[in-house]
Image (tube, rainbow, N blue to C red):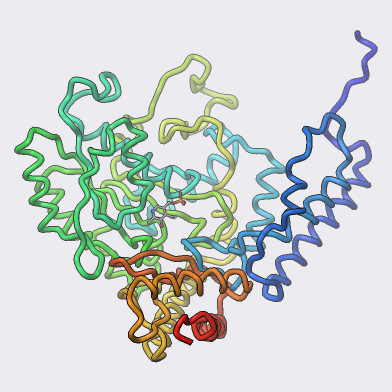
Length: 485
Ligand SMILES: *Cc1c(COP(=O)(O)O)cnc(C)c1O
């Protein structure tokens, strides 16, 4: 037994591994620097897909071969979101500096649970900065999470604990009247999922109609809540959208803040990408009232351009935040000194215990570039969206399908006299052909029954000429695919 040689995953020869690592980094930087020259996206060919159905390796093939498989089969077939002409869904671009940040985080292999180590102080610093950016007080609660979906779940869980008129953590929901959350019909489906994950049931999400500009109808909201109260339900939370995913619509947050204050309701703001528009002085007024919210969810992997995954929940009342998550365990006691003497236990602010060092890329990026750089890039993206909207409006074959308050443009190719169903079909075909051409990747949505080509600009690599190329391609494909031709 004791004659077995001891093993490790460290390299036998660090010099050799260093050479390999330098080559990998060079390849990665070449890949980033050359992104504009490649197609935005291409489908994964059958023979490449087949390479992912191999048996579980019992014996390793070695790092050189494994890396070659990555280079052959993975790296050439990206989603495309690092490309200057990717504007699908709401995706961030990533940054070269953050590549290094994530490498450094993995080097330290940080477990950011809140121990007495420097990463705890990095995260606390990042949270302090984010509170300041969003107009939240220093004593607010906050935590970095995987993204907006988790950020919404964390916030709604705090709202429920704080507002339920019974001890919901202890008693659960059985034998109590229905707790109700309200949000507009344009609200992201992560809010629907959060309501279900909390065990409230989908029927506990009151969906409120929107006005023509896709913002919540606050008169309908008040009526809906009054009716629910009469029916014996317990309204506890309103979710305001700071930038809906379909059109970028911003609910009137200040109006909702007044309403929630008078009705004793929790106001949560889903600002996944839109909250970051607060950095642009010209658009900050659209977010007025956000600083009065009880909680706020936003992403840094969308409009801060950082690599996945990093989002944030802020909660105005730090006490309410920890009251929803703190859970005692003998093996997690904080001690007066040593490793377990950190100033915070992040597990008191969310569902995770072990956590990655997602704070490092935020901290390094803000230190290296400064907040104003990000503010200028966000303003640039909004200007680009407005440029695109103006070009669409000025092109007779194209039709703008929704207002453009921020960075999202919805439009379609128009053939006069073609009925709506045929137009939808034509525009879906144009979008697929556009993506398959590799020229650009917008995504789609449906607005008032109309299929929209949807361009969402959270991309620090896009230039004006990229939007010109998009429209030229849409017009050309529209002519080619027009069934009347
Ligand atoms: C993207 C998005 C979310 C979900 O965030 P993830 O980071 O994808 O989990 C929630 N709300 C809105 C408005 C979004 O745009």
